Each structure stands twice: as C-alpha cells, then as structure tokens.
Amino acid sequence: MQPSPPRFSFAAAIMALSLASLSIVAAAPAWAHGPTVEITEAGLKPVLLNLYAGTTVHFSNTLMTPEGLVVVDETRALESPPLKAPGDGWHYTFDKVGTFEIHVEQRPDAKMRIVVVPKLTP
Image (cartoon, rainbow, N blue to C red; front, side, top):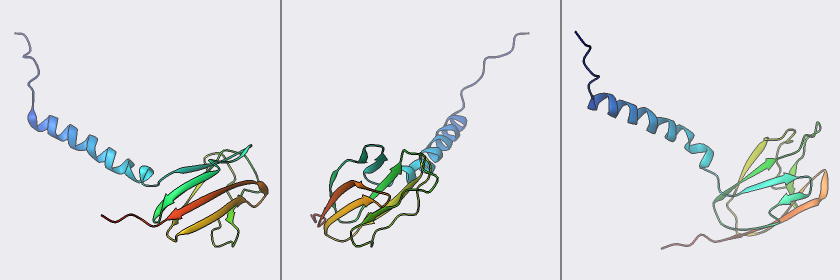
C-alpha cells in the first residue's frame, strides 16, 4: 500500500502566515527611526538633514574607538553616550523647531547641520 500524498491544510497555512507576520512585527522597531547619520573616518554623513519636528534620527558609529565618540550639539542639550564600536548607535527625537549644529566631541571637524521645521498638518 502506497502512502497517501500530504494533504493541504488551510489551518497549517494560516498558522505559518501568522508566525511569519509576527516576525515582521517584532522587527518593526528597527525601522521606527527616521534617517541615519553615520560617524565615519571622514566625518558625519550626511552633513545636512532637513526634518519635520518629531522625527527620530539614528546616529550610528562605524569606527572602533576605546574611549568612545560622543555626539553633541552646540548647547549640549543633545548629548549621546560614548559610542565605542562599529554598530553602536543612539537615537534622538528632534521635537523643537530650529537649526542644530551637531559635531563629535572628540573630532570637532566631524560636524553637520540639522534643520527642523514644523510638522505639516492636513
């Protein structure tokens, strides 16, 4: 007697799709931030960002620095923890409208400007 071919199960298909969608939802926080600013050997990239108020920016270190690199603005209202290894990152939400001059404390030549404008309302 030959074994019968496997039967298609709608319940199994729905369960598989449900599990797959859970993994997508679980990964969503990684996409929650807006633009990424990279700390590179050449400086901060990009050197200019225009944002709407309420946008979260991810600062990502690409360098190995035992002492760490600290991202600050001119008033030090914005100050990251030390980012020591490639892949270390920090998020900051720009809620206030204005122009922010950002630099890396240990590398003053690594600088950028972030311009925040009011969020458009429908």
